[in-house]
Every structure is written in structure tokens, then in C-alpha cells.
Image 1: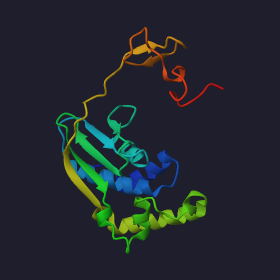
Image 2 (image 1 turned 90 degrees about the vertical axis):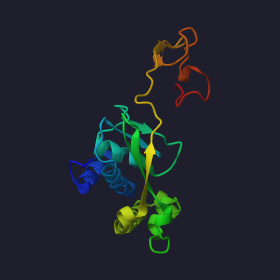
Image 3 (image 1 turned 180 degrees about the vertical axis):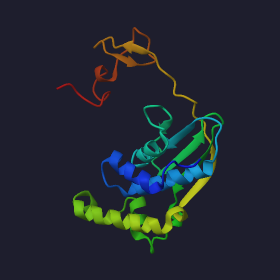
Image 4 (image 1 turned 90 degrees about the horizontal axis):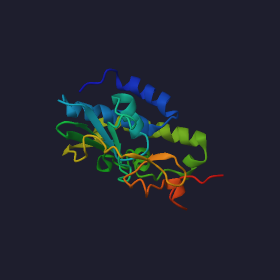
Length: 203
């Protein structure tokens, strides 16, 4: 499969969408391009999986139209790897592309290596200018390698074609409908389920 625009054009779109200057986004855009090229023509709809919550998901969404909202993109961030898979929904045949640490010589590309293993200078967390300069070094070093620091695998994806649509039931405590497998008599939403069962507490 070929992209409609150049990688540089998609990198600009990524930054507009992502809202911050992230070296991982530039790397991710090249990873998406490589995966699509390796995948080639497909018989059915394109689906994708990303294995980390950071930049890769936005690269995929901007470049392919596979999104979390249309359910063509699966987020498997519990894996925690800088990797993505593009696959044919019908055949489940795909290509997994990842940033390969074994192909990044630490002595020649120390900033790219440190970025990949999250061992950069702690100042990247507190000093915006330092972070920006470090980001430039990461990108410069990646651009010298590009696909030479990426690896891929041919894979068969074992995810369902579409996520199971759970029924919606009103919570027996607050009355708000939510998606659940529970019976109507036992449907209790996360916020009503007690401490630690929701991401927020009522003020």
C-alpha cells in the first residue's frame, strides 16, 4: 500500500494533530510508511495495532485513517514496546515493525539509543529548551539510520475483526447507561463501584 502524501507531509500533519514537537512522532511516521510498504496490497480493510500509548497511535491515525474511534486501531499499550502492526482485516495477515535496539550502535547514536530505552538526561523533564535540543539530536541520529534501525516480522493477528459490542444498561445506583456484560439487576458502573473503581471522584 502506498501513502497518498510524502512522509514529510504526514510528519507536519502529525505535529498539527499531536500538538507537541515529539521525536517519537517522526520515527513513528517512518515506521508506518515502512509497514504499509511491506504489507502491500490487501483484500480487506486496513487495521492496525500499536503496542505503546505514546506517539505511535497518533502517527497511525494521521497516516492511515485507522483510529481508536472507528475501531480499526487497537491499543495494546500493556505490551509497552515501540512497535506497530498493520494487517488485512479479512486475512489477519500483517507486518509488525519495531525500533530495534540491536541495530542502534550506542557509541555512534547515543541520543537515539538513550531515547529508546528512556535513559536520557533527567533535564528533559524540567528544561524545555534542553528537551528541544535533545529531541533534535534524536531526530538527527534517526535520520542517519532510518530503516536501518527498524526491523519487521510477518505476523498473523489473532484479534477479532471487530470489538464485541457490549449491551448498554443503566447503572442501578446513578441511572447513567454504560456498557457492561452484567445483568440489569447487577449493573453498577465504575464511579459507583467504590474506591479505586473509577478514574475520578465526585467533588
